Structures are given as structure tokens and as C-alpha cells.
Length: 279
Image 1: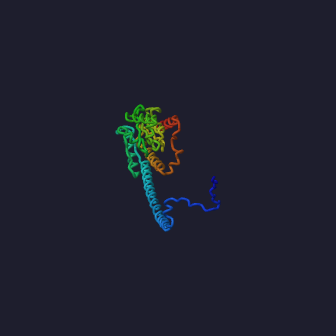
Image 2 (image 1 turned 90 degrees about the vertical axis):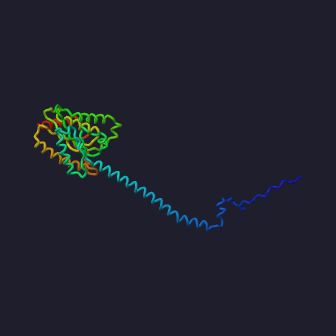
Image 3 (image 1 turned 90 degrees about the horizontal axis):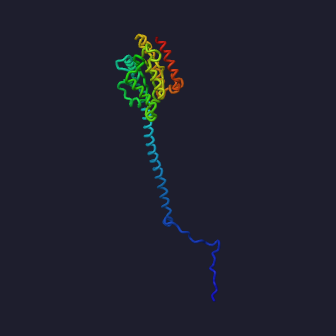
């Protein structure tokens, strides 16, 4: 009978077998110069890669900054434009005064203002407009607007009620002024009714009023009208300068004439007072 022999145990502190290595470690073993060359190559190439990456990112940033600056300048240019919008006939009572204010703006502004007539007004151009709108309105006998003016006022009302279409317009960027021509013979309710209605519609759409509504009585003499119109022209130019993009006019919104939140009754009272003065 054979005796069972226990295999000898390896002492705890005895030497261990060699641990398996990867093929790369086996290959590089004893070849320290290769590691040195690789390290030196990385030390030379990595700064170059970093520099190229920096140049690429910097060039992209410069293009982005240039594009944003061009967009900003284009926006300021668009907000500096002016247009005289005549709500009346081209041979009506308000037409000559519209040409007077247009000529005055041409003399003072670098970019010549446009003049739009209600008979041929393109509402898409108005929706895209972002600058100053000077409305010259004419109220005919009985406090009635001309057919084209009536259509324009109805369009403003429809625009205010259509939230989707309203978002596509830029009325919140528009700064406006209104000059009205009408007869005091129409009575307090009909005197310059077009100008009063226009003021309410523009406020509802979020446009900013920069001057008081200037109402003229067509029964006054040309001399009286011209004196007031010249004063209004100077005030208009002053307010336009204050409300140019980047000017201090942005800080005076609270003190602007005709707060957007004012009730319509206060506007009617203002018109009644001017109606009394014009008599």
C-alpha cells in the first residue's frame, strides 16, 4: 500500500513567478531609447497641434464676431431709418405738409427718408420697418377718413387681434409721431378723428410715441399753420435724435409723451382741448 505524499508548499516569502506582460511591454523591454524618442516626438508635436487648434478656434471666433458686428450695425441702420406715411389723398389737404416735413428730414438726415402714400402703401414693408414713422393724417368732412386710410386703420385693428401675424411685425421697435389735419367744423368728436384712431391703434401694437399728437385746424390760415408746423418740425428732429439707437432716449421711455398704458379717455380729453384752442 502506497503512502499519499502532500506536495510541498511554497513558503510565504518565497519568490513569485513572472506576471504575464502585454505584447507591447514585451516588445519594448530593453528598448528604452524607443520610449525616449516617442516622448521627445510628442513633446515637439503636441504644442504644434495645440497651436493649430487655437488658430482654428480663433479664426472661427473672429468670423463669428465679425458677423455679429455686421448684424448689429445693420440693425442700428434699420432703426435709424425714417418714413413719412401720408394717410390721405396725394392732392389732399395734408399732402403739401407731408412734403414739407419730408424735405426738412432730407436736409437733416444722412439717409434720405422715404414717403409712403396710403393709396399705394405696402403693409409688408411696414411690418418689416423698424425706424421712425411720421404719420401725416387727413380727416375729411364729417370726421371721415379717405377710403385707403379707412382700410389701413382696419388693417391695424386686424393685426392687433392676430397674435401670430403680430409677432412677424416690428411695431415694438417703431418710434412714431402723428400730425393730423382736420376741420373744427366736424365738432369735438369728429375733429381729426383719423389721428386719434391711429394713435390708439399704434399704442395697442406696442409702438412708441416720441412727440405729442399735433392737430391742425384746416380753417386756420396758412401762416398760422406754418408757424406751428415749424415748431413741430424742430421738436420732431430733437426727439428723433434722442431716440436714435444707442442714444440716451432709451432711458427716457417712462417720460415719453402718451404712455402706452394711458386710458383712451385721456387721449380724447387732450384732443378736445386742442379742438377748443384751434377755434
